[in-house]
Image 1 (cartoon, rainbow, N blue to C red):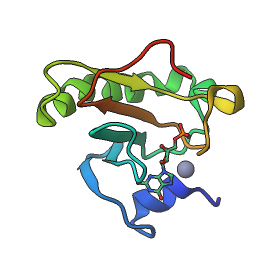
Image 2: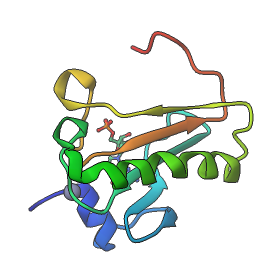
Image 3: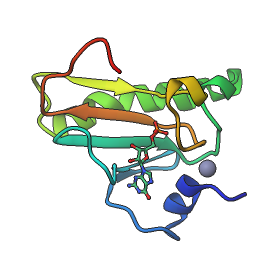
Image 4: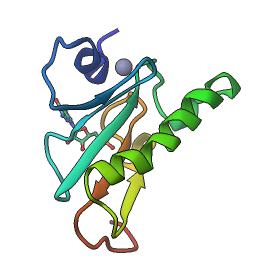
Length: 112
Ligand code: 5GP
Ligand code: ZN
């Protein structure tokens, strides 16, 4: 399968890695939308949040439980935003499930 984020996980495409374990890979977004803009992705290829199943429960918990550690590491004590753009109208451009962790500036609402 030809997937950009799978190629980043395998190291075939270079990335600025922040964290890695058996289940997830975290790296800096190439086009940051905030002073801190990380992408948290499962090593398992899942197209989007719309394709997650019961069997992914532990993986999803693992991702969400990692967020505050990353926020602490990047000094986001004032707050941050976690985003999962999902499918076409959600603004997803890479079809490998990913969570954007954004921080270091005040976020606006509603998003565009
Ligand atoms: P989406 O638009 O699917 O929610 O998010 C995809 C994100 O991947 C975008 O923020 C985009 O900047 C980032 N991205 C796309 N290609 C690359 C790449 O080759 N390396 C890195 N580090 N980020 C990428
Ligand atoms: Zn993939």
